[in-house]
Picture (cartoon, protein in one colour):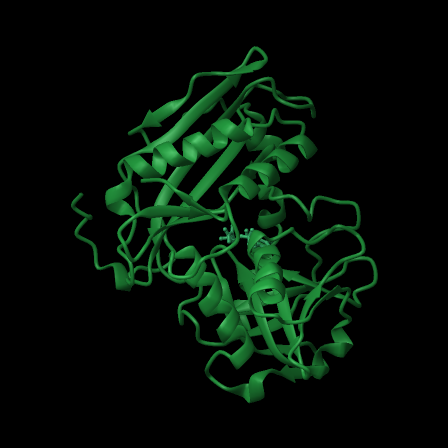
Length: 343
Ligand code: PLP
Ligand code: COI
């Protein structure tokens, strides 16, 4: 199969329309047949619940070309399960897991020419989404929904790729205790745009959120979880007591990689902001971000510097990143079932 004629290495994290998306509608209590479409637009009633009450959730995963030319996805079953949890919380009918996996297979396979070649540094980003399409003017759930998957070839989420980034603590909160922070709902991202723009205006790459209840603990950024390495070389993963952090598939995978493949000690616990000075490496992890090293985190009083302020990823996060991407690209054997072959 002939790949598209694209300068893959020059891709940023942007939208490029491909050949096919996947679409399936829900009405009268059941999901329809669904299938591939070449129509990349959506026509909606002006009264659709997505437009008024943000009844929407989404997912993000990637497809990779392996060294031997296969196309694979990384742990799509966990995306299916998380999307089911997101949908349930928003009173949307979950798209069945087996159908989710089949739809990913179908749409990635149909767009095989868009999956960046092995070694190009780019990947195919797969974005499942679901939203209320029914006319609902009162605040209540829709009776009609659409599930779609769009795919787009992408480069690094942050411009510098693996260049360490600088973060500022947001004065705003991302997710309330017992709120919607643990699901992947569009509403969590709408409110993050302002803090993100503020961080940029002040010259930082990202905004870090603290726990909303006490503003004491490290939570996450608008699009990635935080991971830390202490002076003893242990991986420390901030946990929230209030379920307000998105359960990142990358973070959960890294915990297993660190513990079982690299023999590292891993500690998952709430981490106070004022403890950050004791960590030697800090990173953001997620599907889009992979692992991006953090050079510094500042708030109005403190400036925490990691990895000695180096402009390169630190040794422990570097090893974790090499191992994770090695598994994702089929160079390293990962735990059974993590890498799913598409074609
Ligand atoms: N946290 C937030 C708020 C995110 O949007 C994402 C992206 O999906 C992540 C963390 C990372 O999650 P994952 O590793 O499953 O992509
Ligand atoms: C992902 O990593 O897949 C996300 O959804 C994060 C988003 C901010 C791009």
